[in-house]
Image (cartoon, rainbow over all chains, first blue to last red; front, side):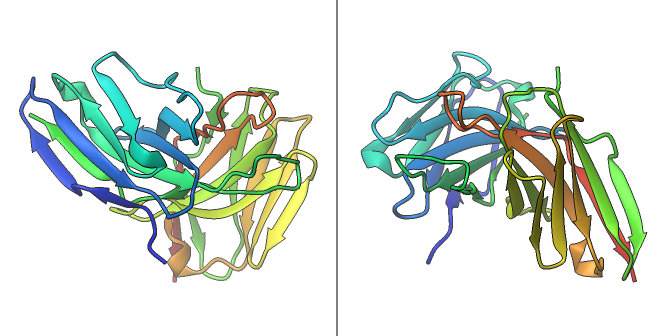
Length: 120
Length: 115
């Protein structure tokens, strides 16, 4: 079975341009997450989709960032008017969450290889 | 403010010895903790997790210990192998907060296992 895939693997763009990053989660996974890792930093949460619920956008750093998930599967992260500080590796993850969770329900998020974004 | 802290940016151990990676957290709402391993140019790979109802979880050479009173967890790798050389991230989530299950990550510890 295929894992989480992301495209492109690398993206170089000029400051001020818009970019779109794509994530294909593992088939059947209901939850999808976007994170980013800036140089020398840990992974920073951006946004989370779970089924038909409203997404948790609390990690988006500015209104230049948006994401959508079409048909409960593929997700696109869009960054408008890119800035140099947006340069990072953008990672997508998916997981399979049960409707009812208990402390015994262990789960993990499976990550894609990431998209390295460089804004010049 | 960092809610998950990995205070050692790097660790070097000899093959066959024990590797101990440490992680501290500040948010008492965290109830689920995970360790991820990351090789260069790859996404993080899940290694092992522990729920707050446990204080130890073991999987082969990997054991995670949780000390809730100290808000501290550690990952033990025994015996360490050169292939274990990678960056290890500690992560935590508050699954019972009623919100999303986003993971909060530490900055990582780069482990080098020398042959």
